[in-house]
Image (cartoon, rainbow, N blue to C red; front, side, top):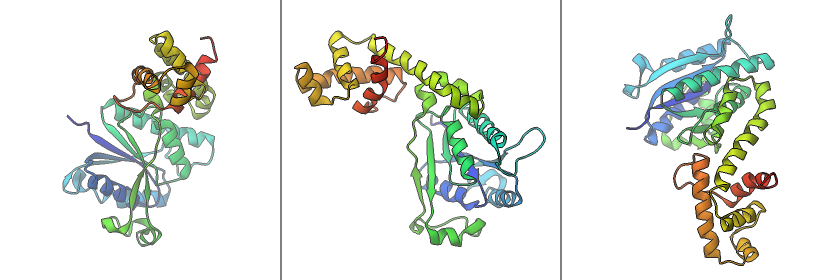
Length: 288
């Protein structure tokens, strides 16, 4: 059974950004069952939200059920109308964490759209969400040609034909929380605490996974991994260890299998020489 898809979008004054992206996802065969838009509370943003809500009459979109909801960035006493200081940024951060956590707990896949709203809101959204995203989630940017953007300004046009040139562009991001589950504890921290603590968590998590892989290798496989950690490629490793390139491939295959398990990667995902160097070079420079 396929997981349901939730589109989380940051919303500014251009409501058509959300419908353009939603239409593009539908064209890819990704049926979105819920749309949650995170928004501030200036009059312009409220108007954009109201215009967007009109596209979901009776919680339906394109003749199918699609739940629509707004997620205002709020404190206990008010809804923010802008992000003016660190305290406001922390509220956005916490709002995004709670939203993403709730969606992930429900078992849904997230498609995160960062094009709308204040740039700072998008940066905080991806920073927060990366702690909780998984390999099946996606982060998107929407490209809209200038002429289409001008014609559709502030919701004058909410849908365009495929030939209009609007494109969803996938943002390549690493789901840190999936690779290092322990750092998901940072989801309850403030942005300032996360800046201080994330290196400690990453170091501890990576060392644990490196040790897990290392302990399962033969002596010869450890020699091969040491070579990779020094930045040697396939042929350089073969020359340095006086073995064939085919033997290097065999050892790398075993190392890659163990790394996928340790870092919770999907079966068959490539484990590059660059990854092995980046992860194991500091590990092997330590106590091993």
